[in-house]
Length: 170
Image (cartoon, rainbow, N blue to C red; front, side, top):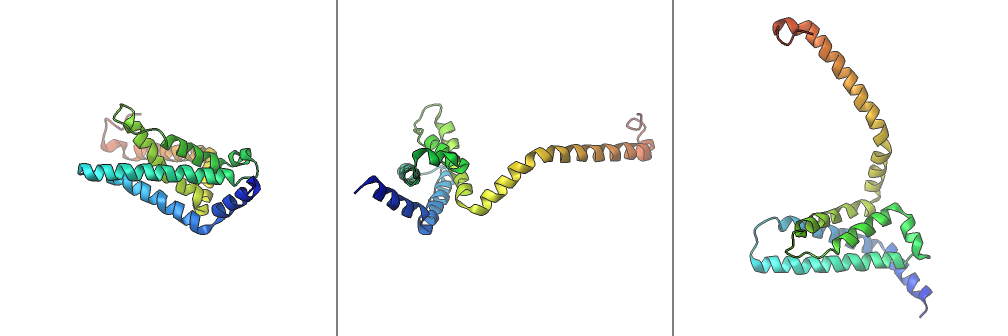
């Protein structure tokens, strides 16, 4: 078999809706595992969760490698911002979890696996893109709100300042 045949198989896997739904299910399962680990667990359950976490990490690594291999040219994968986002999250989740001082940081970084849902659900991608494009305009909204609140504060002070002479002085 040639590389082109493998690439076609990887594209078929990547574009399969069942595969996408399975990845979404694993992302949700991973987030539930992280939530469960916040409780005091029996050591056996803790070890089982650790093994499951390694399994989820390996699955995410295989999934990102399949998506990278499905691209016609390797660097085309990194031209899409959501692919870069997923790649960074998967690479960060490869940081080993041991009992070092950075174990808490590594666990917190694994929480970002949940954010991968954004790249898999088109409606969430649209919402995030709209939010990011609206951020510059939100500064003007905040400025307008400040002006309105300031005007109402001054008017309120002028109208009701006599009720409390200490606060009524301008």
